[in-house]
Length: 268
Image 1 (cartoon, rainbow, N blue to C red):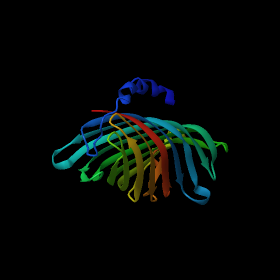
Image 2 (cartoon, rainbow, N blue to C red):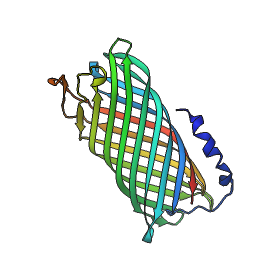
Image 3 (cartoon, one colour):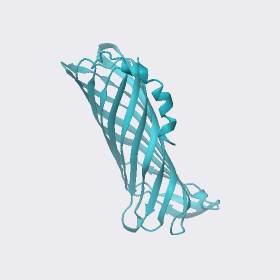
Image 4 (cartoon, rainbow, N blue to C red):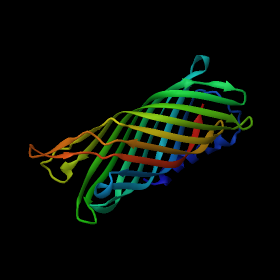
């Protein structure tokens, strides 16, 4: 999916962003629509079992915030990014042009603590992340690929710091720890053998870290983000062929890094 598909509807709304208005440090009722461009890198295993995915992605983002009494607030955000990734393995060769889709939905809430020209806002919530990769086809060594789907349910615990940059702008920075509550890795091995099941591995050990910072005005914002996940080896799952139990499958210890930029338009 190309960035050009997202730009026309967003650029059509830019005239509202040229009218400067005061921006508050406190959380206020608003919704935001934006685009993101990022690079994703996934690494798993070690030695002869090591493999990695790497590629660039472009996506849409949405976020809303609702202010409550006594400086409390809640909100949610969602994003979906598309792109093609390159696969490489120590034992199975390489394969490029693999479709990759990342979807994430979160609900969070917290409280604002004003400190003069600055503000601290701790928050917590619940998040769901799904990464789907289509590796069907042959690698450079002739091995046959298959689709993979990774799903995480996690608990975000974070802190946002906002600093006033004059009456019409602020700098907002967030740091976050994500505790993995439940992880599922499904391998669609039926893509390589129609008699095979599609085993699901459970992943219970893992955590994520996030850092983001953005320059924000009343109508728009621009900034960068870095996301990191580290997840331990999964439980065993058994592949079966024609109903006959076969090989035990394990998703090895892995890490994921995302780094990119976002541009958002804000509506009040």
